[in-house]
Image (tube, rainbow, N blue to C red; front, side, top):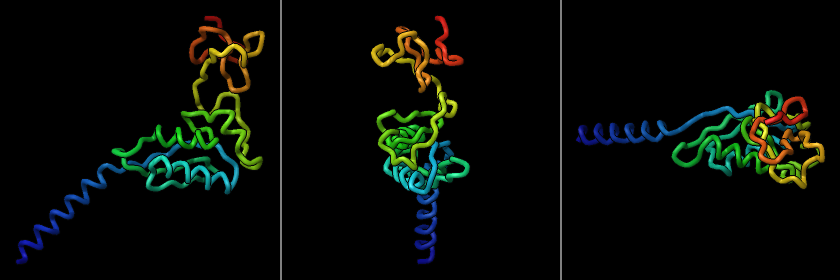
Length: 156
């Protein structure tokens, strides 16, 4: 009888170990200002599948735990950006950023947190001289990523 319980306990421990093996913990740089931002950022991360999400407003670091079989770091970043917050790899759209409460509208640097510039192909939203816009997207047709330097488009 003891052997059955021992085997059952061993089997349970093995399944528990396998379950924990899939869990990832990552840190993600996320722009924000206040306690309200904290709530929005953490909720967005959890909505993306994070099992745990804690954002620190001083360091601007989001620590997430997630099951890699259900979501990914990039999925979490995309969901946080969709909520209006720039992350280290994904810039929030102007539309989602502008929906944030005024206290949550952080200062957006030209090149957001090590994010690579994305060049726009939509000429109607670009300046006439082809210079970079405030979001560092380049305004020349057929421009490639990383085209902006010092507020001017690099020549291709």
